[in-house]
Amino acid sequence: MAQAHAVLLFAAPAIEGAVATAPKEISLVFDEPVQPSGAKWLMVKAGDGRSVSLGRAERGAGGKQLTAPVRTSMRAGVYAVTWQAVAADGDVMSGGYRFAVGSAVAGLTGTSGAAGQQQTSGATATAVLRWVLFGSFALAVGGLVGERLVARRREPEHGAAPRSWTVPGTVAGSVAALGLAVLIAGGGSLGEGLTSPSWSALFDGRPGVLAVVEVAAWAGALVTLRAGWRRVALGSLAAGLVVEGLRAHPAGESAVWGPVLTGVHLTAAAVWIGALVQVIRTGAAWHWNQAARRLLADYARLALALVVAVLVTGTLSGLLLVSPSDLFDTDFGRVLTVKLALVACVCALALYARLRMAERAPRLAIRVEVSALAAVLGVTALLGVTQPPRDANAALPFAPPPSGNAITVGGRADEIGIAATASAGQVVLRLTAPDTDLERGPSTSYKTALNITYPSGRTRTVKARACGNGCFVAPVTWRTGLNLLTVRAEAEGWRGGQDTLRVMWPLQPDAGQLTRAVKAMNKVGRFTLHELVASDADRLRTEPTTLTTDGKTFIASEPYAQGTAPQSARFADADGNTVLALGFPGERLALELTLDDHDRVVRETLVAPNHLIQRTFRYPERGNG
Image 1 (spheres, rainbow, N blue to C red):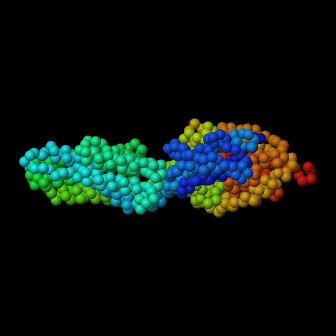
Image 2: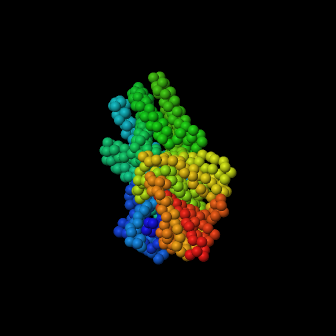
Image 3: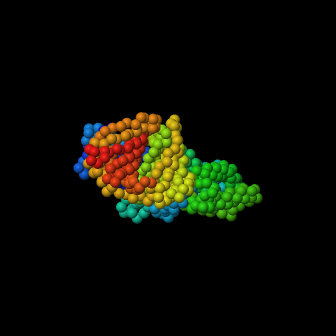
């Protein structure tokens, strides 16, 4: 029998769980006293690999609890915890788990509809500021391009061309960018951002850093424009456009193509609008003479390429975010539909103006085109604060936390270990191949298929979605009685198969029953234990082992030796025997204990990631020693 080791029972934040706000400390509770092992005994890393700074560990609860304060701000996201501790027997134990903070919770449990109901703090102010920001890009970037077009056609007899609105546009852009940064510092409130800003929100998270960079880009453009360095100013404005590409919705779907498509889309739209404004103002100043009409023709040739760029990049960006079926069923889809309709109107007006240009300058059509383009920018700003629809079957970055009482049951599909955590309305499945490193996470590719057979005998297929490599979550409506969950598991490079797990519903937590069972076993004298062990690929091929031991020795080797378990549930089997189901999610460990009338264990099934142990117990008859 293996020597007993310390078992991680509980953690805060919870193992595979989620918290709404950043924790102030990380706490681990073991089943026996432990000591931190080394200076880096506990490490917490964000999804981007950055480490969270932790303070000195403190021991509590008789040495069974280790707590470390969090010294740096933790923004919303998924975090990986690895720990290392020395148990009482001198062995160094290590393990790991994950938890989520903040808005990541919505991405764990939300469906397409639920995600669409999310709100952005300060949505109205954000939309208005972004509308101003987009218009400022048009006046600044498009204004600079418009100046170049006018310079090619201007002759002395035409008189001076009107000054472009690049400087006013840059001032407005600077104010809008600063306002967006203030919103982030104020948690969505301009008032809070001005009176009591959170500097950590600006400099510790990606959105805040991007907002600061954009403020600097607009400030640089303003200074260089005033100095007459237009090419340098254009470079600063380009940096601002890059920032907009990085923080737009498509970037969340594709880290490479999302920013590229958004940046090109916004640049083309800005030049389209801003250059048109400058051409219109110049044409009016020149009284729409022949030179003004030639200027408009120059712009029309440029606009054709800009329209193509806007349409292509806009279509590709839209396909990253929404399917055609979602255009009328979600808020994001409906707003996008309005934008598409406005763009179609603008294209029709532009085509009409191009066809009439040979006769006379179509002033009214051009002015309406500019107004429609301004509306397009407004709808684009509204899209920025509207949550894109989410695919209900898309992979989640993290498993959702259990809902209410939960129990973990286990099994094996040939060479693949199975641990299923059942709670109200869902089951979270974790598959483990023999070569899995639980600290670093599985590297094997997994597939699964689920069926559930209800107490009535009816069977239905359950559709699961991925929640990490080897992790799957599925919605399940448990029925009163014995639910049989059949899991078919596959793993690249390993033999798969299927196993059926038992989930008795509703769960009846009974910590007292486990305590009574441990006490009863500690009083048992010598008895016979028959053990069948399968490790990795040797499923049920090892010959049974017969051991003679006593209750106290046996219990000392069990993970529930202290009479407690993170998850426990009691039910009766078909023969009326009491069965305790125990779950240790931090260890991916599940046990079933069948008890006799004296609270002694008569059968035990233990499922670990790469082990399956089945035991039967034979006690001497009372009075026979």
